[in-house]
Length: 384
Ligand code: HEM
Image (tube, rainbow, N blue to C red; front, side):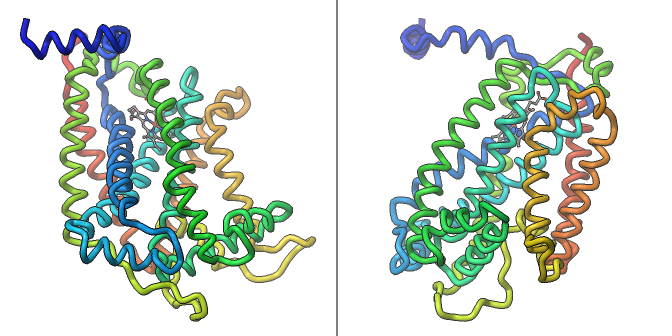
């Protein structure tokens, strides 16, 4: 027996890994025309790992105080070897992670992968998505530049409009009445400690449940899947995942190197708000909706509070879809129709917010790419 084999056996024995290996060796991935969607969760996981690694590297130099944050990021970008690249990778990967998490969620909903017994996989996934948006929101302020400072001011102002809990939420987020250095250290705490701890637990549970329940087959592909031999997860599917991750790393590195993330100007708390003030792209649909709402109030409720509360209802709806769809009365096509309307609304508002057709082109290009990859992956698998 080779030395590597002996070390392997020793580790398997001492760590009691036999059941894990058994689970991995028996796991199968169904093959059908929607198989490509099984890669989206793994892709999201890849970007999460990149975030953890690059985030820890940035932490070594970053200083979370109003008089040092901007300068420390400037130092990372100009003096630390490859610091500019690590920061750029972290920023690009954050956006790609949210993009893939949204795609993954969309596929789960449209293919009804959340149905019994996968309700909790869906709930933990939706919570993880809200958390990573929280990562985006808290991380945006950390470089302490002009745009981030005013966007955070506007973002937290929005939370303050909500009746009853608004005032408290605003003070809780800012750590006071105004956005100050105190807000910065608070956001830093959320960004590097609280959110990562919760996200790691949630994503861990999400992945564990996926392993336990295995992959679902969409109702419309059941016949096709029954006619094809499922693929072994290990090593066939895992190697394909790894191939996708390698491609993703290439795309990420290219974006980070060719379009380094900008730093802008240091925040000036007394300056007037810049004209191009805007949130991250995944909050743009809400930002644009709020821009269209006129001032005024009805029955003590500001008009602005209505779309904000509606987004809260939409978030709750996403969490509860597995249970809503399980009800006899509501089962049917209307959930899908509602989903399509929601996507069209979000994409349309985002395009309007940027005064650009790019968001629509991105959606169309993504659909085309998924269609091509879907065609390639459905040809795999032989007779059962
Ligand atoms: C935010 C980070 C997330 C990560 C890292 C993640 C990761 C994964 C991975 C690796 C898988 C197995 C491969 C696959 O089916 O794609 C998976 C499956 C799944 N995920 Fe996620 N996910 C995330 C978010 C979400 C969200 C937002 C939802 C929906 C609300 C969700 C619902 C599901 C469901 C239902 C499955 C099982 C799919 C099936 O059986 O066909 N996940 N996830």
